[in-house]
Amino acid sequence: MLEHGEGMLVGSSSNSMVLVHGETVESEFVPTRPFRVNAGAAHSYILKADGSTSYLM
Image (cartoon, rainbow, N blue to C red; front, side):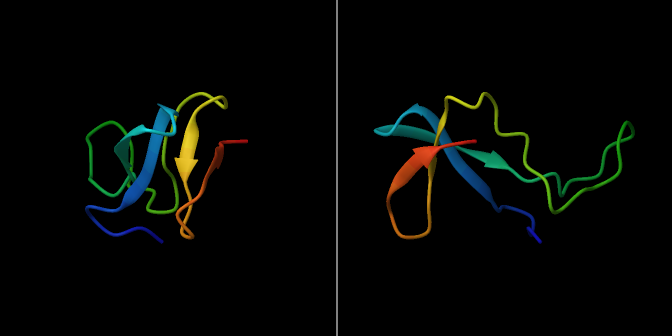
């Protein structure tokens, strides 16, 4: 479960990434889903806990 300010580091190259925030902020359109991140296309990279990168799949 993600807390406010948490998410995944995602990018189209392993050298440049952005934080994609988890769906922890309430909206009038959708309820919170702290287990979910809309991270983008499957060809994007994600930074893993061990410091390595891999494709989202």
